[in-house]
Amino acid sequence: MKLELFNKPITNIEADITVEFLTSDDLKEHSEVKMLNKAGFQAEQDSICFLHEKNILFCGIDSKNNDDIRSASVSVVKALKTSNYESAKLNSPNIESISGLVEGFILGGYTYNNYKSEPKIAKLKSVFVACEASNYDEFQSSFEDALIIAGATCFTRDIVNTPPQELNPQTLASLAQKLAGENKLDCTILQEEELQKERMGAMLAVGRASTHGSALIHLAYKPKNPKKVISLVGKGLTYDSGGLSLKPATSMVTMKMDKAGACAVLGIMKAVSELKLDIEVHAFIGAVENMIGGDAYKPDDVLISRSKTTIEVRNTDAEGRLVLADVLSYAQDTLKADALFDFATLTGACMVALGQYTTGVMGHSSKLKHDFSKAASNSGELVGSLPFNKHLKKLLKSEIADISNTASKPYGGAITAGLFLDRFIKEDMKQKWLHFDIAGSAYTESPWDCNVHGATGAGVRLMSQYLKNL
Ligand code: BES
Ligand code: ZN
Ligand code: ZN
Image (tube, rainbow, N blue to C red; front, side):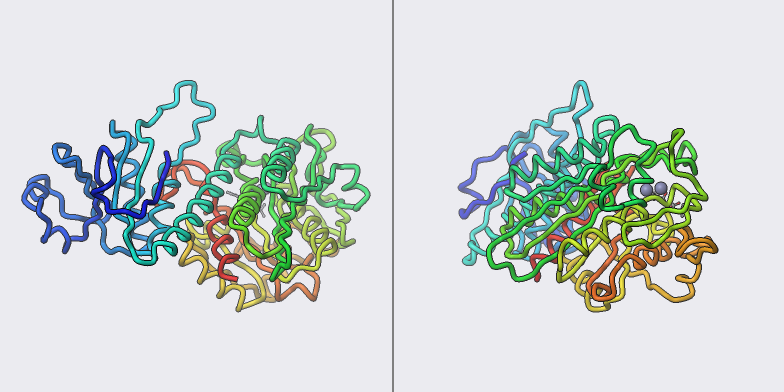
């Protein structure tokens, strides 16, 4: 489906059906109010009413704000996709809600069909948005940015949704190379031999039982005269079986999504390069598969990480932090960045703390956390801050190594995981680093907001918005 913006009155656009968003106040004044009353339409947020004989589709909204327009656009695109209309037109909302409209249509209309023998093909091909505002150029630029960001979010969703027999650390590396080729990014892949040379004992241990070699992917977007340099790190567990601390059968299902941090970072690289931001952005991805086997790493192993910190393994299912420890260390030594952000489906505990919809944000800088809650409110993503404290930090003490990969008490698991990562952040980066736990927000088995079954692309809209604000 294509979404297009036109600088002309809606009456000059040809389409099969017209879409109108109505508040309950708009409804009272509307010329079709009698008909709509008959149909029982009360303009409740997201409620839908077709007047087929007039070729109009109404959708109720509480207000014209970005969140309400996004949510209503999802209802509209879902209704249109199951109808026989091939094209639709509507008036553009105000400029603050244009991104919500684009996200609603593109992200709400998304489906992952690659493995359906007979995918349901929607008849809907085009949605035309009419805009006659005097500041049309501004509308157009917001509209085009929103299209880029929504497209990058769908790109991330596609990779996360790809099943693990197709998407392993090596194919993820190939995909990153392909993106680099298409978007003119620098790309370096470190294979296991090079990871050995880098002494990445933590990351290599996690991937040892897999038949697919682990890889560290480094992508870079380097515009001329960048205003800032940003490092992004992504957890790319293409499958997390739990390893020898094997996950129960029902918890293992959906663990293809344990690469969502890596995929978000790839989507962000796609977005920043297409938005042509004047910020240098680097992506560092640890692509690994956590499996069982004769040479699997074990609870009781002590790993020597790249930064020489020794780690007692008490649970092989707390593998993401081991991979990130080495990738964070590599990223900090490879590049002097103004900020360092990592994205990871790190803990089930984050979902317990914040619910399924909210990304957990951790770090030492109140300013950075504040900037992200601002970016989030414009991006349509939800974030919540989880506070570090010295008492939780003590729970990571090990009797035989420098640190344990699990905490000695069961509460505050998202924070203790964040504090584990903190151990691998250098002193001069402490105030420049944030950790994003997307365990809940990256994947869903029931639709919410503009998210449909499967990957949500969490992190892409949030980070793109933050980088645009810089
Ligand atoms: N990938 C999981 C976290 C996860 C769980 C993501 C559910 C999405 C949904 C991670 O590697 C993991 O298994 N973490 C353990 C840590 C524990 C062993 C300390 C967890 O959350 O149970
Ligand atoms: Zn795990
Ligand atoms: Zn994991």
